[in-house]
Image 1 (cartoon, rainbow, N blue to C red):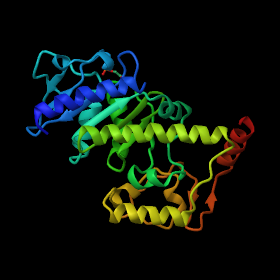
Image 2 (image 1 turned 135 degrees about the horizontal axis):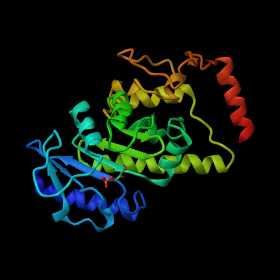
Image 3 (image 1 turned 90 degrees about the horizontal axis):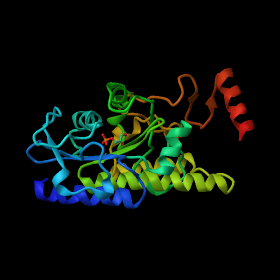
Length: 268
Ligand code: 13P
């Protein structure tokens, strides 16, 4: 992307994130990689609603500053995503309230409730908690970045990324919208999941249409385990260390997991 377009879009997205309450105060950060490899990033401790173009920080791919602005304290997390995913050219991190509520509750956004989300975003796993701006956070995210286009960060927020700023922002928006619908459905008595057959069809459509490739099957994803679809790399983390599911949709749980599930149901 050329610098002029990148500056304009970055500013517009900062303002949109603030207007939509995906961030408050100085929360969140956005970055974009230019054609020449340099990174434009939001500066640290700056309200995205009041961002102006002159505040944009410029760094190299190792995070070294190339102008007089101090880039976001979370830049290392953005750089990790650029390194792990050469197709990604823009990253948006925010604390959208519904998505972040999932992250605070220790939940991934991975229930098969919306056909369009399975088609275009896939499930959004929960990365374990890591202290913001440290390697802990990058280490927690690293195994998930390759297979997903958006992640929840436990007790923190959400991050989405894409081939340009608008795709990254759109994915963040879809994440937040999905989380909101999931919470509302729960208030109305609970959501009805799509069947394994319907999920398989949607995954086949998204792969033939090129929305997501087979790498997105290798997910720490609740609904994928309901299907007969194989993971092409075998690199398919499960949501739980010991529970498992087979193609018939049956799951097996350890005694401890069953007790935890029953306790959770009783609490609810
Ligand atoms: P920065 O102001 O350093 O970008 O940090 C904001 C933030 O959201 C931390 O999670």
